[in-house]
Amino acid sequence: MTLPVLYKLLAIFIVVALGYIAGRMRWLGDERQGADPARTLSNVAFYVFVPALLFRTTSRLPFATMPWGTLVAFFVPVLMLLLGVYAWQRRRNRSGRLPTAAPSVRAISATFGNTLQVGVPMASALFGEPGLAIHITIISLHALTLLLVLTTLVELDLARAEAAHMGHDLMATLKTTLRNTIIHPVVLPVLAGMAWNATGLPLPPVVDEALEVLGTAVVPLCLVLIGMSLAYYGMRGSVRGAAGLSVLKLLVLPVLVLAVGHWGFGLHGLALNVVVMAAALPVGSNALIFSQRYETLEGEATAAIVLSTFAFVLTAPLWLWVLSAPVWR
Image (tube, rainbow, N blue to C red; front, side, top):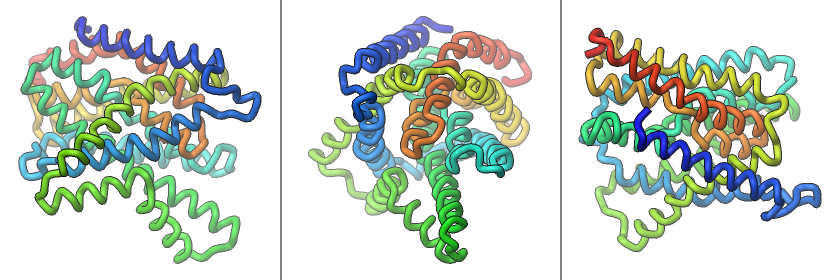
């Protein structure tokens, strides 16, 4: 573990602790009196800041020069685990004991990494500018890919549940899913950004500046939100599930990326090191925003973020040791 990465982790814990204090002291409102500041902050992030970040990112992506081979080698195993966890949780939830959105919430917690706050300093410190360039391309598609897939899955599940309850037919279910998936604070800005990107026009400077300001608010807001969620939901009853999700994120996902990337796509050296360490990152804060959007397993998602971030101090050196073997060079 390098000092820049360790300092970044400590900074994250400090901001989360401040959010926890704000929640415990009820500085932003008391939920016992009908206020719900954590959900309000989550809605602000989901409806204002995240869409601005997604639109700006998508509108500026240099699709023609992206290292597509490396990106495919990363996202194929990530999506494999995402769909595997989702299918497994759907099967377990046939009795309806958990909310309809639970399989998607657990799938995002098992696969969505903290590629920005922890990933950027890690890639920069370990791999220099060449490695950071690869990592940045992963960031540019990370939220877009995973959130698009998960949004489609969860909206389909919700539409199917509503259809079963209301007696709607298949066509009505598909129409509801399509409408809710497209008119969505994640999907719509991505589609709009891609449309703007296709025009080849740069964003007007004032618009670009405004979007950048909004986008930079995502990280500190999410970290404060994690702390507040810990204060409101706690970790009681969530540790077991969060520990399982942390194992999937910190150990199982890097194994998949290492195996698929090396033997499936022929990656080695720097590219393989970067994608494996990107997969080995702790759970990202978007997992909490997603869970709060659908009011499902917020405590478990919060606990998974906290536990995996603490555990990353131990698992990161493990993966660096594994990657130092001559077989991967």
